[in-house]
Amino acid sequence: MAPLAPRSGDAVFASVERVNAELFTLTYGAIVRQLITDLEEVEEVNKQLDQMGYNIGVRLIDEFLAKSNVSRCVDFKETAEVIAKVGFKMFLGVTATVINWDAEGTSCSLVLEDNPLVDFVELPDTCQGLSYCNILSGVIRGALEMVSMKTEITWVRDMLQGDDAYELRVKLLKQVPEEYPYKDDD
Amino acid sequence: MIGVGKAKQYANVLDKPLSRGRQEVSLSAFAFLFSELVQYNQTQVDNIAELERRLEDAGYAVGARVLELLCHREKGNRRETRLLGILSFIHSTVWKVLFGKVADSLEKGTEHEDEYMISEKELLVNRFISVPKDMGAFNCGAFVAGIVRGVLDSAGFPAVVTAHFVPIEGQQRPRTTILIKFAEEVLRREARLG
Image: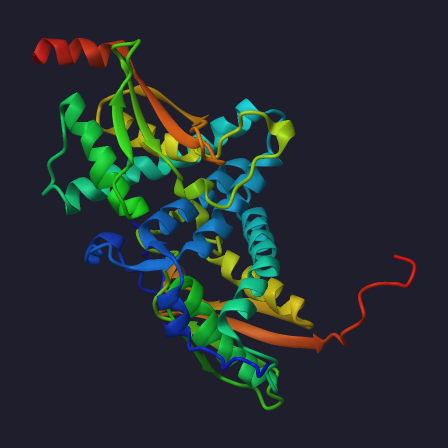
């Protein structure tokens, strides 16, 4: 069977079941508030959000590959474009822009102007160090790890911290060679 | 004063126009997030009752905000003050906005005057959840029960709200019933208002 043609983010988003973004936003807010109450330290909350994102990313990549028909990207540049245009679109209904490539083509920025996580959100003075959207970086890291890419992801700009956009710096650390996962005696 | 001495500009949330609530995200994005909520809370508790209570608390926070948002956007800053009014507001308006449809049914309990039930054949949060046998009657609908309690409580109708699985004949999956038991004061007030 010939491989299916990759689908655009819009096409996939139009075909999947969707829910009101406000339910999603408010539920995420409830999670963050619960974490702040439980863990008290913003640093710990950031860590936990990243971990939750990672857990999601590890599972989400399967659905992404199954629904988008995207096959192996030729290079990291293509990977970044696919995340920005297809990945973000198909799950969150928004797209990101890829900018600021370094000379080696191993790190770039994803810029989000629209971000469904942050509607109704304002950080109080006590939470200034909180990286509210840290779950997103975790998702990307987890998903890429499942397709053999170790990455490091940091927030460069955050509108909740007073910046003019949301910017994620994605840095490819290494491509892990694929290994046959099973030993003979398993 | 907030923001003084900082070079960066903070956009005040109240200065931004209120969204019309038409934006959507994929159901799986929500399902993934909800699953993390449940899994995280599982690590924080020793028993099922405690887990349901924590999910309910998370839902309560959502409910309180949903009431404020919807009263402003859908009801022109008015909110229901009568028992049946607020129940039908939850059953239709709240459900429609949050879950994309009105709830399957809203009924009055037959045995107790103070009990009402909202039932849903397949509650959105339970769509991708199967409860392991050793967790007994645990129902993730506790989150939705929390939302309902959050709306009711914030509107001045304190109640105890719980989620239960109710088997339906001929169906593999049970439906979820959200049981609302109003506080005495609410019924007394209703009686007085006639």
